[in-house]
Length: 365
Image (cartoon, rainbow, N blue to C red; front, side, top):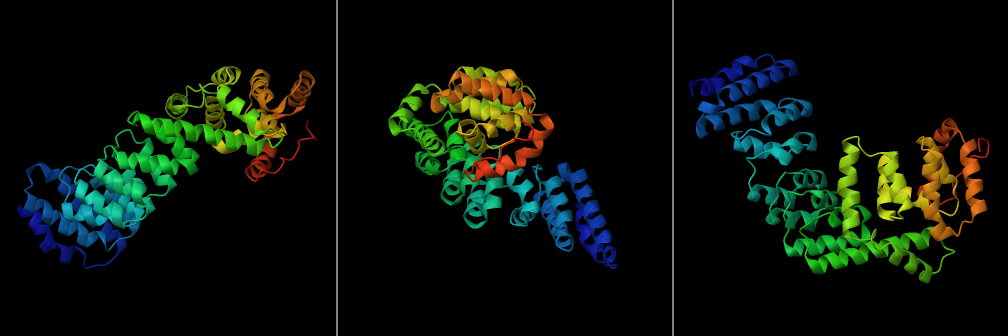
């Protein structure tokens, strides 16, 4: 196309006065022309546009290139060489390209997955579709955050070797374990491994939070929670509950239901989503011997008395709380104000995260 080739000749004239504003404006004009003429372009025309935009793009700030990347990312006919260059750029530039660009082949993605850093790997792991050829490399090189992202990706396909590696890594990552448990493509033998890992993680957590319990008591509790500590439960926790939360449809009454049904995995996940805290912190608050953290957490989020009472019922399985202890806890909850609880929640988080006893809200309780 004459217009495209003419841009190269006009480039020196248009950029005579060097300034970010002039160069950014020129880049916008070239991109506008590219999209306006894309249907009529040949491969050679697209390459010319790519050369022009690449020449200009690396004379401007990262933020300007990031805007260009967002425009080019979904384009079917985006200039190949420019796309490959942007994919290796700063993550602010590379992310939309790695997440969306249809110009990137499996060969490209494998090469990037082998050579780029964890942020770039995370972007690749977020693509709508991923072949097992690509996920094999992601699983081999990714950190826990990347592996959790790719395990949550329903459009990602895995080799058996890849799934085996994910299952093994999930032993040390609660988030990855939950994500992996939500998949429907796990072979039967690996499903058994995942179930064992979930049960073992729950057992370790209960023993850590409740040193007064012996191993046999915890085994009994875990076995009693069999319906909650399996793959189907984690599917509900990781998929359905998250979808309800994102749609604004996850309600307090659902938390009450899970607590009264003693469905521990769903209770923890629901409570975490409703409070905006991570699962591990919520689990510690729910199961710690000192109940002040749980009361503050519930009151800070405006939960009804019956919600707190239902959560206390879960604690009876591990803390042998009698009727008087529950009544005392409810009286304390009644006198605790929302304002006092919210002012204390930051301190409670810090104490719970370090396995220290949370500061009591005696002045308001």
